[in-house]
Length: 567
Image 1 (cartoon, rainbow, N blue to C red):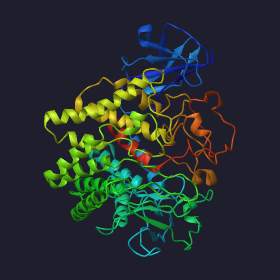
Image 2: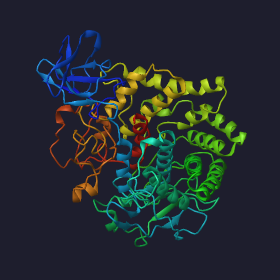
Image 3: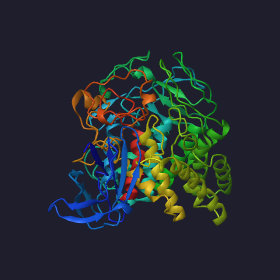
């Protein structure tokens, strides 16, 4: 049988929806599947047609069947069998996700700039010289620190501020999911502070440097001159015209581009709103840990919000010699989250009114409606502002905001229910980031509403990230340890020195049309997933494919909340 059974390789909690996906190159039919104990090979349960949903062709497969064994809830190790076809073994256990949220922080520490604890080395210590600011161009400013964005060493305020918010949000909502095995420096040890707060503090300290004055805010360090080949960050010799100093782009709210390509910036609110929300939730979390630091963050949250209000619009990243940049076209979601976060810390009703105003302007995140997007066109990919706002409103107003989430989920469901993977999320660049964000939206919707209408869709996209996809691979490097996961990511650390990038969420599959039109992609090795590629969607575990197999810092941070909620 030219068929494969795909499932969540991490496993399933006893009370979760449990579905495996039988994908076949042939049109097949069967009436029963069985669950067997992996230790004894004894059948522990069998299900017939009422637990089998059949679908027609999708991607490389001629037929797909969803096998629902949710009712089985006894802990153990099992596999599914249909005739002679067997699935990989998997666990059912309440603790299958234990430690997974902390595991993601391994990659965040690897991405640290200034001092990198993974390499025990310093890098980019001369950042940087200003461009587009009110000060003379090439003025030196100390902005060393933060995280590298991905395999390259560019740094963006928009992704970093979003990452900080997600880390602190995960801790605030699920503090018991996090341990203390590392020092603030990122080196092993215990300092009495959960590691996630050490990591968030690293990001916050950098954001404070990027917003040093009420009327100064910076958006980006370096540009695509960075794309000069594989190299370790501490050996980065790219010269931007001032030796080891790199350009630091000011949030001017105007079009930028030094090397012939230009963005479409219209304002500062998209970046400033992210700064403000990161600082505001930082105020909340650190208030009982470091009061003076929390007070500083509160002041910065207010000034960042005002910086955004002064120039409504989007502050896109600056391209270089290539036409690629983060094409963010929305900003009211950022200001909604910023406003409600400030209301949480100040109690000022004006912030709540402004949050409602911004929230009503973008009920549904636009990538959901459009089923596509340019690169980071509508970012972040989930609007947590709706969740924060709904908790502060009267019952009628709360229901309206909850319905914003429901409307978006329903749009995705109407696409998803037509195929056997229940996939209604577009295969655009960084599709895994969208997937993690969408599952987060489903979780937040359930928390607010108590409605479990979309629980199977939520489970399908959760499982997709960990192996229930056409390639049968987890999308997180090293998770689970004994599973199939990316072994050859697009990364200097792994390509040059074989370092494991544990915890990194890779970009994920893209449509065939996107892949075929990207510049500079060439596979280094034979494609082990060739059988599962199609015009619909492709994924390569290959260092040469930066579009599908590059881990990203902000995508990784997005997944931390979801995994902490599963713990």
